[in-house]
Length: 287
Image (cartoon, rainbow, N blue to C red; front, side):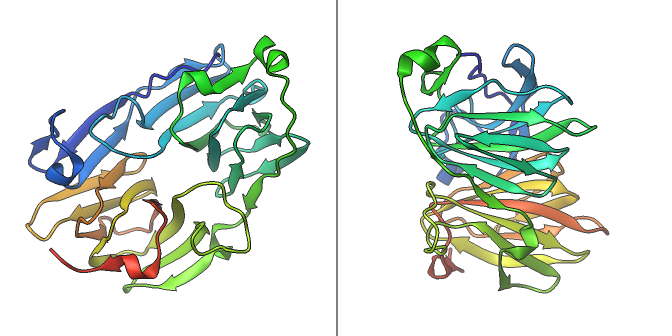
């Protein structure tokens, strides 16, 4: 089991200060999460910087999340994640992703969802480093990862197929506030024609300069806003606000009202992970 479970995070802050370990997300409100320092995984074939996981005990998420980097020519070895589906969103570079008997090539901005238990590996096949967000649900634990000689001992045969979203702009588009466009990438509640093996939804959101999402909340679901490009400001009705730069995320607990604005004079791009999955009736304004 080569992958290590050090899901580090550098800081977990509120606008009023650091989030104490004994505070619950509902008490703490919106929090800023910066990824941890990269640590080597798979005998140095890749590095992993944790965002959500066992180290973020204040965040009561049903998944784990981090950023993996792989140099050209390197790859994760064949392995299985027993009972856990993995989502890959390519931030940079080119990935060659094996999923049982099928191999797909994914470029920047593309999403690949791997069903639980499949024999998988991810290789960096471009000229630049491959960087991707990885999300595991249920959350990753070392004991679920089977690799090396343990694969043969497991004696498991699967024939899973990956779900591929090649272009974020081909997702379901929703009419939102001025200067914002959102595209659904993955949503098990809305995409009934596809058997999606996760309980959360993912949306790709573009905020033009001045663009904003007005005050609202999501009933019964958390929202993690990961900034791919640019910077956002997330504010609550009581006046607390945090700024989230590229590479970091804002965690919004369930039933928490917030406003999200583009904090720069250039386009900002974010991913929104809502768990359990977003549906229109969940969104509303209340205190």
